[in-house]
Structure formats: C-alpha cells, structure tokens
Image (cartoon, rainbow, N blue to C red; front, side, top):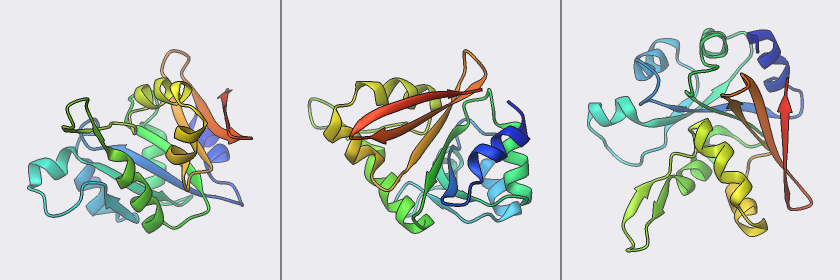
Length: 170
C-alpha cells in the first residue's frame, strides 16, 4: 500500500485521523515527535525516566501534508509501528480513552501493559471480544486500522449493530 493510498483512507472529511505509535518499535520516535511537533501525548501517566519514554506508546493527531504525517505514512507500513484510528473526538479525549485500555490485569491481579497498539495484537484481539467488550474497547473510536502483515494491506475494524466488522483494504 502506498502513502497516497493511506492518505485517501485516513484523511476523510467526517473524522480526525490519529496514530497510536509504539516507541519500542520505532527508532527515535521521541526525537521525531520533538523535532516535527505533531500534536501528541504519551499514554503512560506521570513522570517517567527518559529510557521509559523512549519505548512508550504515543497517540498522535495526523494532519495531511505535515512533515510528521508524510514521514509516518511513507515509512510505517510493514514494520508494525502502530495503528491508525478515525474519531470525531479531540486528541485529549483520545488520550483519555487509550490510557484506559493500556493497563490490564492477570489472574492474580497483577497489572500488565496491553500492547493493543501493535497491529499484530489488535487484529488478533478484536475478533475474540464480545459485544460489551467491543463497545468498551471502541469507546470514542469510529474505526481502527491495522496493517495486515501477511498481505501487506490495511485492515479496518468498526462496529455495526454492536458487531465487529473487519474489512481488508487493498
């Protein structure tokens, strides 16, 4: 899939485009965010040491024609750097929603980081959810987009009548 094809999918009139990016997968993500200055937030709460911030997940608002969006859409596919999202909500609301998803608990009640922003995780997780779980997970999100690593295409996930709709976008 080309950068131009991604732009046509992500930059539509009735939704804002966001990316949830994995600092552990993207070399120098924090520096790219600093240099290119797109609207963004770390999904980890509170003060963190620099080495943690380097591997942290970030929500980034994407604007067509910006240096950051051009770089990301040109370089990201096939590298499982993160996921894309459509929403009508603000970046602050998206940060709040994604922060609510990032911590899960094991059977013993121990907290763990849920790496939903890894496209390999998202595309395997969503089909296992029931209607209530999907409603909670989607929250303020209209559509999730994750690369289909096997096919080098993009998968879209949305809710229709409380059921998951998955589409392979060629």
